[in-house]
Length: 621
Image 1 (cartoon, rainbow, N blue to C red):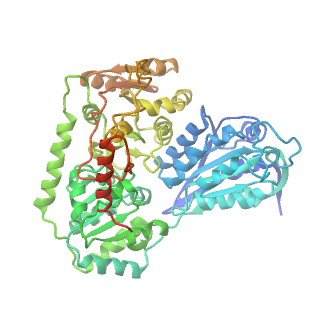
Image 2 (cartoon, rainbow, N blue to C red):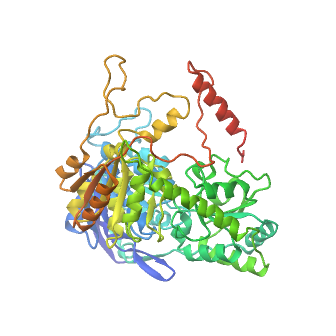
Image 3 (cartoon, one colour):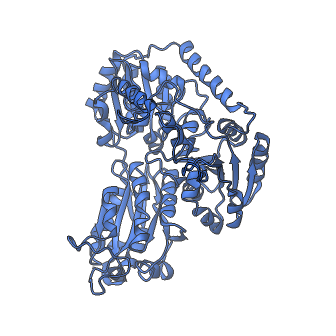
């Protein structure tokens, strides 16, 4: 057997450099490179290997471990889960900074390979700098914090263990049903240890990602249920995008006259103006989709995990006879809500269900005029919000209208947290699949700027825009600098509304007078943060990092800044001063947020009673 003497880190990189995925006969190099920040836990191990023998892997220098891992997640998401960047960090705080990003990737079913440094396996220098000393279990380290947020976790304490661990890591990373964060904890001494690795382990390896067909019996059960249903509703999730099934979804909906509602991950599966596209559903949904969901007698969920925002905390489906058909490659998701499970690839399942329903001469009971009326009513509401003027300044919905009108159909928007996801889910009008990049599984503040860098890295021929509130920007903006360093252009659209206004609105809607959510000075008289708003010059901050930056306060200024930013060769930031509280609200939807039954405020107690009434209308299963 031919062997090659390499350090464990060198072998890991050579292995990663030779991994490919094959989907529908098309092979793609899976690992594009490594994002990293070096410290004593990885600089002489993986760091040496990246410096001396990177092969075809590109190294990208991160500026914050969480930020670079978000960027890697966004890269994989925008690549349809067919390409990834691995992320390496030191031990201790460097590793722990990636835990939030690991959770974000896992919740969203996105492949993310994390390679945190770890304590010395030999333990000779214990306690090493940044080591956690757990008296009850000395095997614990900071890397163990990744266990609950990883789909696969391993610690390589001998170099030869890499072979089994790396293959298991690839199994999970390339499996549509199992994918998420994969963590390989790498003790810093083991990274440098050498071993005679079999050449076969390091050779080119192609992982065939086969489409899972539906069971004939599952299709039969789904058809038997639908035959008696007149008002079905399709709910399209992110699985439609990852399967490449947007064409099959459109053909299915058109063949049987079934309206389509979209989750945050599913949005843009159909053009916004498609006659059957009713827009977002649930807490952040449209009036059209939510009314259809309330009356639907069958829900066909495709590639959705049915989060509480999609189901409006299980209150969205008001028909007592409603039943569910769940098409999902993951059995974990296909059994939710007590539905008929069609555990299969979305494209394969839609094709099979289409043929079976056609053979049964099925058609929904919707009238064309009914669906057209619902869609037209909502379109007029979006037009109203897009053109809504306020004497005091620029509203958030007006700003979104200007942006939506100014961007090109192929431009990509990236968002994650705050009030923007709600407004975008309801109002944004995407024309092409894959141009609406929303991280709403974790709704992780700080994903936006990092995610835009990752998306731009994945789609270099498209303009990419980060939609971010001032709160999220303050939490994490470091990869804006990385985009400038790498010459990867993105434009940050920063909505400055002086605080965490999304939660401020939620708080006030449940009996509060507003507390701790706006960026204000502390008042001497009250001792609370109720003074004047804190003035912040975000444009100046962006300029200090080398980005071009603009500050706008009117719709016309915003329009001009967007045109100028498009002409820039590098990254830019547009600071948009918007009025607090000018985002959209729920359209016949409800979200469960419990409040105490006992309070010194009658408004809080009244809110508790309202919540109890809402709970009474929800489904248990």
